Length: 188
Length: 450
Image (tube, rainbow over all chains, first blue to last red; front, side, top):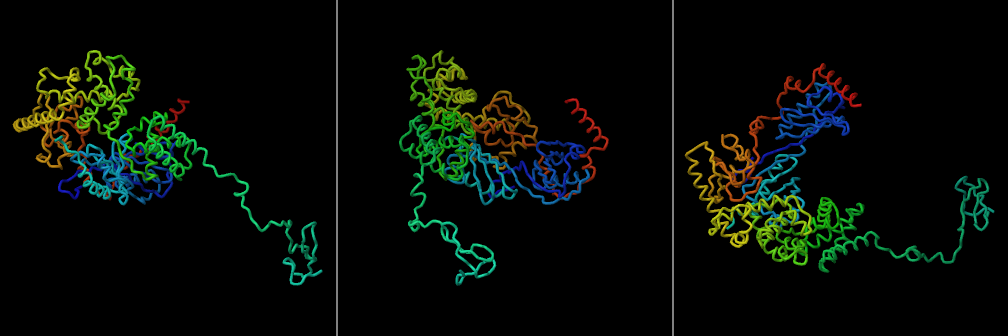
């Protein structure tokens, strides 16, 4: 995805979390028995089902609520969710694919420069927080986008947000702030 | 005797008589017997003036006992750390504010103790008093993670903007913990903390430039710096033979495991610079670099410039030779080059993740597959080396960057609403026979476990 700058920044989506409902009760023991690639966790009351293509792990509860993680795009998440619903249908449940929603998107991005975190925190005081003794990255929360950006001093940036568009916007917003706090590469 | 103007609310009759019950006057309906009205039981003269309970009986409102104890704890911590009066007063204010804030009203006593320590920490930070979170947690014998969490909550709840310490500010305070002055150890091993600080601070600054400090915990770095500084202040054979273990035992501090790796990294960095010293003829390696440390630190700027120039020359040489040959792997170790970022031919787009893809697509040697080599080695055929590889010093995550597999193309084709064929789904479902066998196997397994 391109940012609004001249150079193109590669934003790589590493994880998309989505939820949907099947509108029917699911018998977890049946799923565990008749499904392949299934792990039953009775102590947690859920079943973990892993699909091969797309590479997705789904947590299935008996109420019919399902969470899918591991997709690398929103469309892939939808495809995986539908495949899962189809699979459950074949197992004999009266599944109706409904309420599909992408809940969280995690992306990483690499800035072409290093960032001086102490300056960055000073310039963006209440929104940015940095505690080097606790975590090596500075955290920047963009409230109106509901996105959280973690900036590392090497220039790597991880963004989490509710959808891909927000994540891209967050990167665009934070780029100028990081640019002005960049660390010079060579000592003059 | 019937009373004028009054009727019984129960039956409605007007036949109401005064029939006193002991000292209480009562008006009673004759027909149904219900009490229509009654007088007051007591006729005290002072009924008009009302005196509240608070003014007569209750004792003066006392501050919460726990709050008092907490404030005493804050004072105790301040005394141990020997901070100024201002710091102590401010920490007491913050503690009181936080204690009475709704966020911290119902927390456990343990958390309240940690709250006391955090208020001291915040007040120290605001007054530029160098102290680390780890020191405070050691003082309290509390889990640093808990202290960290309470600290963060407190800062956000009280809306304080706390300045961050850089590691160089903390060194002097940290060096005072090491008991290696002449009172504690024999003369040949003794060092004054001021001399140690003076030697350690430029070393840590240099380490910060060499990407040894960023992202790492402060205390192991400071420990490594002080150990190396102590060795280099009097590089006798005895001192050079002292291991970190023995040094920590002597100085009565707890040894930090990561400090060993930091020492190795710092020595590597010093070797790279030590090679550039013009009057040193022998080869510089980690065993003799400590003797040269004083000179290296004194002339570090000049040595850095020389090292960068050497690298640049080597990079240009490599680029020329790289144009001729294609897949040769150069055997001798090469130092990664530095080029001015502005004039690099590779555009920003080619930096970062794309280089890994380029590495995978080409048949080039991959730095990631040889992680045991130092940052010194570089396979010279990277079509677009990322900014880390071109520099003299780069962070480890950039030098040993992860390969991103070329699965990106698959992603582009997915729309989310495609057809799902039956055969695909069948691969996820067991046949009835398989299911029966699986159930049987589970049963036998569980019975054998019992």
